[in-house]
Length: 235
Ligand code: MN
Image 1: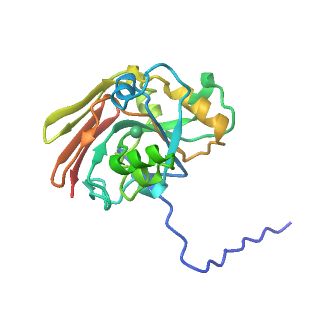
Image 2 (image 1 turned 135 degrees about the vertical axis):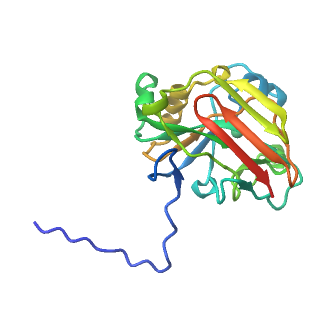
Image 3 (image 1 turned 90 degrees about the vertical axis):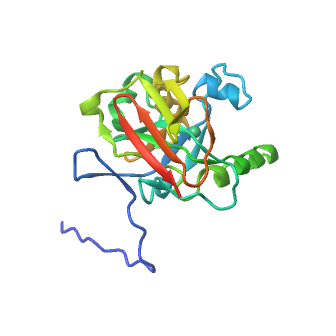
C-alpha cells in the first residue's frame, strides 16, 4: 500500500521545536515537557518553612521554551521584585512510559545537565497564600536556564557530588546530590504514576538550601560534580 504523507497546512507558522545543546556534539536534544520537583533537599524544605520528613514528592511544570533564550544571560523578569536562584541537576529522558519501576528508571535517562529554577518568589508566595497555581512564579520566559547536556553513556548516573551556586563569587548554595530526599529513579517512578512520560521530557530535581534573590548585573555561577558548570549574568 502506498503511503501518502500529508504536510499539515498550518494557519500560522508552527512554533520551533525547543532543544538543548549537547556537550561536544553538534546534535541537539529535543525537549517535550519540563517537570520540576519541589523541596527535594531537607535543608531547603526547612528554609521554606516545611517539615523535611519524606513526604510524597510534588511536582510543577515549566514551559519547554522557558529553558533559555540566551544561555549566558538571564533577563530579569517583569512584575517581580524578588527573583530567586535555585541550582538544580537536570535529567533528560530518552524513554518514557507509565508506572515505571524505580529499578529500571535509569535506563530511560539520556543524560544530565545543570540548570536554574529561577523563581519570582514574591508571586509564588502570593499564589501559595491564595491557594492558586504557581505558574506566574515559576514558568516565565527565561526561567529555566540550562547547560548543554552530557550523555549518561559518558558520565553514568550521578548520585553524589557537590552542587553549588555562587553570586558575584560568593558561595550561596552548597549541597550534595546525595542529600536528595527522592533519588532520580524514585522521582521518575512517582512522576510516571501521574503523567505518561515521553522521550524528550526534562526533570529538574530540586535545589539545596541557600536560595536567595539576585539583582540586575549579578553573575551567577553554578556547578554540579561530573556534569558541568554554568555562568549567567542577570540583565
Ligand atoms: Mn526548584
